[in-house]
Length: 309
Image 1: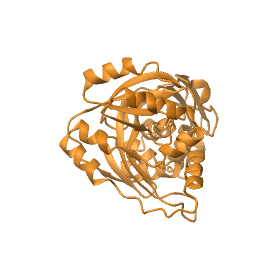
Image 2: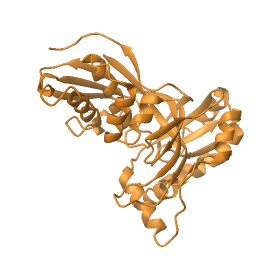
Image 3: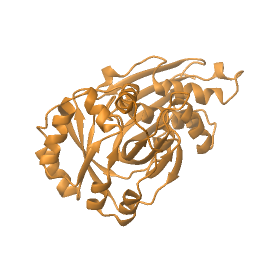
């Protein structure tokens, strides 16, 4: 059972002050972009949960029980009941294309795909809402990767409302040669804000209007990420990347999520092709990708039974 899951960019990411549990309230606008990981789930002996990873930067992804896809598989198995969990097992094969530790939710995409793949493999037929609840326990981005499209995320980003987005958007994604830890970026944001009042996060009205109008120039002018300054503080080379991008006169750009991937908005596909060439030598960039958006969330792309029962 093979499931494809998209990457995401945050068109808007407003971050509130940390709560007592250490988590930050968010007001964000997600968009799923056409860059995908694939997870294949195969039957394995009961109680066995294993994973292998191939593809881009596969060596940087853990192949043990800390892998988010394995955690997702175990969560699905537990829904069959504690007494039945030892009877379920799975081998997961992850094919990576989404940047690792790049602020595009690659690990969450793998977890979302594993939820869908294991549910289908084991014939549980769980409602998507239940899978989303399981996913939220693994990572705040997981529910959105199940949904896809464009959506407003509140709470920790897991309370989702689909958003109207007219037409298709063209992105150029600058993948950094470095990586950033999401907790470290949030911690740096808190350090930079120390002693300052932090307003309650809210979604940008101009950005929502731009999505509804389908106007790339308006959307580009409305892109915003509270984490961008913190990401640059931890990785100063990222500032040189952003300066290089600005000189190329894109429609808009921002650091994606906690970074360090830079998402560059183009007017259309032709403009995206031109920007991809112009930004190929941007400092600190290991590869340049193009993607259209929005795209659907997790989808089964191949079915079949593999491995031992």
